[in-house]
Length: 267
Image (cartoon, rainbow, N blue to C red; front, side, top):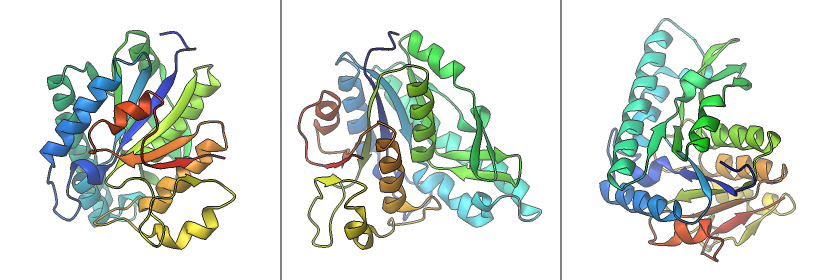
């Protein structure tokens, strides 16, 4: 691929494609809509990288075994295996659905490509991802169990994984245009339930209390985590947009640079 070609990161929320209140449940209609939108977005002359949340799959064993805290007891080893397994199971479903919609999607396993050290990124092998981009294929990452050289293991959210990858690729000269978060709401809501059009480092504090926690089981921090990770990227020159992923047409329009209902996150 041409590194000057706009590169757009798309995060599919785990709560968008699964019911976080019901373990191992899939929202098939929502997944079909989002895959159709990704297919449409792939024809707009931009390069895409996808990441999806673990939803009601990996968050369940992750909470049971507390693997986001590291190896804390003998059960932690079983936890690493179970979390990695169910995270990969959901990814296979997403990949199969994308392929069925005509998208040449390929899995990139975070467990196999990322190493942490005391929860912080130590290394991220991006060569396979860059080769997929060169071939015109669609890399798909996901929230996953990560090995950690200090504490044994941790869990990395999709936001964190895509954020690190965006910064690394930007540093290698790729034209990273934006990151789009597809969730269940038309952006981030204020305390009155209205969409906040723009969040910046200058106004985030006034909205912090309204951000709250996510609905259902989530070990990665919910909406406040999403906003803070997105704002951190914006400060590094990669703006974000948070939209409703199911509202038909909104994702492809957002990728195309058209106005959509949602919350922009800028430095």
